[in-house]
Amino acid sequence: MLRTSFEIGGFELHLLILIIPLWFITLSGCSNEGFQAAQGKLATASIDTTTPSDNLPGGVLNNNPGDPNDPCYVPIIVDANTKNKIEAACYFTNAERDANGLPPLKLDFLHSTVAQAHAVDMVVNSYFSHVNLNGDGFRDRLLSAGVIFDFGGENIAFGPLLGLEVVNMWMASGPHRQNILNAKYTRMGIGYYQTYWVQDFTD
Image (cartoon, rainbow, N blue to C red; front, side):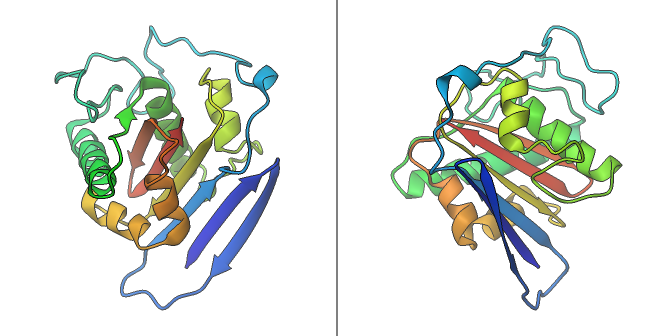
């Protein structure tokens, strides 16, 4: 099953496409490319980034070893396996952008925190959607975290175990590919938890 959502002017449109999969994998993409957020709504709240979150696996502290200047430096605390998966998905995403003449996206702390929290939330609360059980979409979650942006999008998937696999799946689907290859985007967050993937983008 392929499920795609688009947010345009505050309205979310859903497409449901049934396919015969070789293995059970579900993915979903979301873009609000046609929606430019009102300036007054961009900085509605912020989060405390100085202490770890006790109620989410992984926490939110930026003290991972590695080179912070690397666009795929993972800025949140996660276990080594999750860190490797996030790094791989980032590198393969940027390889696709490079092959299409686009600059790399940089993993950002707030984006990564939001993406990881949504991946965990979907697993813990047994759902698969861009909209959480409180009715918040990716745009709401990013704004609540203090991310300021005009354009944004989100890809989600569940099933793939490898970063290369999930990026290949997204690239094979038009709306997901458009998010990865959007020239307006400069920042990204990737979350992974128990085969659930979240990839958030903004300018």
